[in-house]
Amino acid sequence: MKFREKKETAQGIDISPLIDMVFILLIFFMVSTTFQRDFKIDLDRPGASSAQASSSKAVRVYIDRGGEVYLNNEPVRLWVLQSRIREIMKLGVTKSILVVTDRKIASERLIEVIDQCRLGGAKDIGVATEKEAGEG
Image (cartoon, rainbow, N blue to C red; front, top):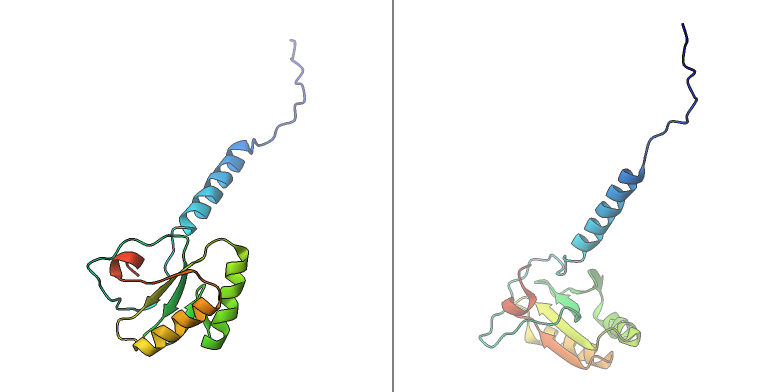
């Protein structure tokens, strides 16, 4: 009786499909997080019949019902807004600002925010309506 000699082979787990799946999940999560554009605060935006969709590259400044100002999803004091806008404008990504506000905000507060944005170097400033800023 003759037995075959077993050759010792290194057996391992092929992890290349695992690496492929990790990269696919990484790409999926990177792409899906960029679609979340608007900061989620409770606003009742004004409407306008001549509204158009705004540029997705515009920097968004939010004013909530209490008159608090937000830039890049962070609360900002009005006197700091100008310097923050100036820093963003130096990066050169965009020169436009979209002010997203509640319809019940006093026009005085809105004008103060727009003035600070202009002093910060913004060239194109708009006020968002329901159609321009979308739901949110």
